[in-house]
Length: 221
Image 1 (cartoon, one colour):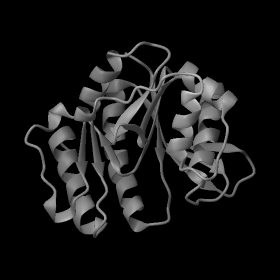
Image 2 (tube, helix red, strand yellow):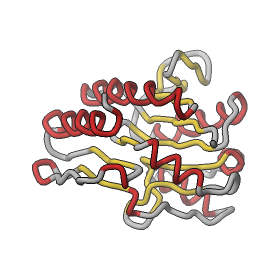
Image 3 (cartoon, rainbow, N blue to C red):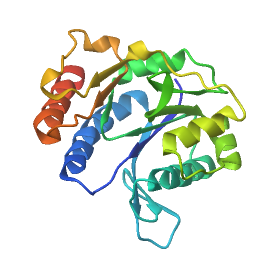
Image 4 (spheres, one colour):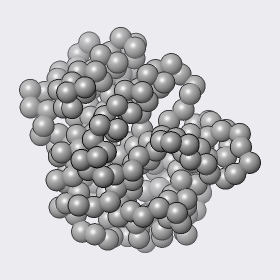
């Protein structure tokens, strides 16, 4: 079984994120003994050290802002490359819920090295589910070129494409619950690897109940 690290983009700037972090923590904690992964909620804060870890929180020096996502991602990548033992890193966020059973089946189908894939969003690798092998993450960190005119996921993808071919995961493993009152919950949840839960309407009204429902159905939480 591949050794996996989940880096979960997180912040404290909205009550919805506080709730979704706590709900995410319940299933990451419950399934950790079964799959043996490490996971960290990744945030910025004012501190002296470049990186600090407190329990399942990983803090990068700096301040939270939209374009800071790449900064704390890059700092976290550098940290795990130097300090932690892993085969695969998955960068994700609080609006994402993973089915670990099907995810690990998918990861087992991949080679041990040279992996640059992720959850597909309109034929491109989405920033909510970037999957990299250790060697690719190391090369990415060593060669990263920044462009503040682009979003963090586009910058990561463009940099990866400078030295390798990126292969988005099949779109069939993703299911979006982003349509508010028009959401349709699939009857066979176990066929999916990844669920995106981010409605543009009232997120407290739609996202929190959906998250609770999936936790109960997938993990009996």
